[in-house]
Amino acid sequence: MMITNEDLLKEISERELTQLSDINATGATDQSVIDDALNDAISFIESFIILPENPTPLLKKITVDLTIYELRRKNGLVSESDKELKKENEAYLSKMSNGRLRTEVTSSSTASVDVTTKPFAFAHGKRKRVSMRGFR
Image 1 (cartoon, rainbow, N blue to C red):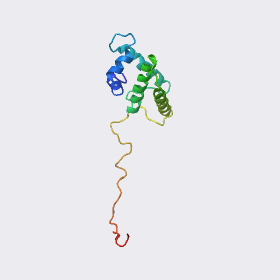
Image 2 (image 1 turned 120 degrees about the horizontal axis):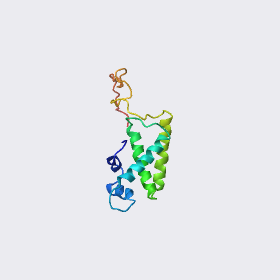
Image 3 (image 1 turned 90 degrees about the vertical axis):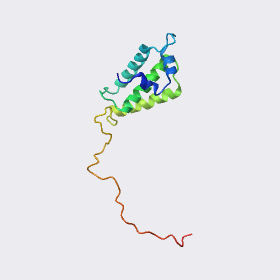
Image 4 (image 1 turned 90 degrees about the horizontal axis):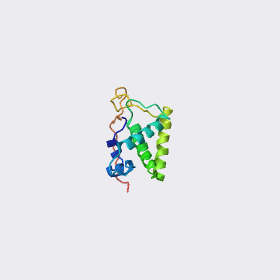
């Protein structure tokens, strides 16, 4: 599973998740509705890219956003901000499909540049101190 309910709960409250998934008015979270929304989100994502085994945090966030969008859509609760967020995520997916954004975490390192090849600190030499006397 690419994302979990815990990932969704980082974006929306447990109460909202229950309300969005409870389309049969049972008063409980309906996991099958959530899974269906997740599958719709994954299908949308896969229209742009092939889902990797180890997705980047951005790709997981996109999946969460699109799953919430699908839950709201099923309930007729899509707002303008939801539509804007979907367009923004679609732009990210387009960049991923063109290879401009990574889709998979390839190593455990977060550094994108080999820090052993080039020092990044400035060399601070001794500078002449300028007297500020007389400048008022």
